[in-house]
Amino acid sequence: MLRKIRLPREASTTCPGFRNGNGQIVVRDTGWPSGTFAGQRIYQLRCEHCAQVYGANGCDIHARLCPACQGGVPGEPLREAGPSLFD
Image (tube, rainbow, N blue to C red; front, side, top):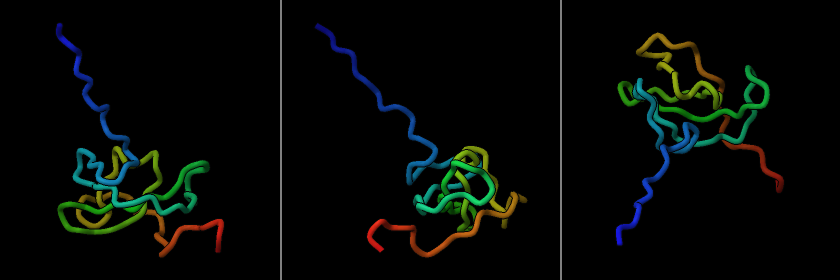
């Protein structure tokens, strides 16, 4: 009897390690809300071409261009640590 093998679904664009078609890689979820798009959080991205690190809201990740080497719009500000319920 043959069994169907389930292939993993494509990784979410907000998962660390996701790489978009322009070479922008998700590093981490900062935990901070986006200042430009209500209901979204800021994610830290890194350009695989020039190593620029910048912030982007979750709905932009799939199409982001690097602001340093690809002419993309400036990223969202990055903060050191995300908010915590225990601080």
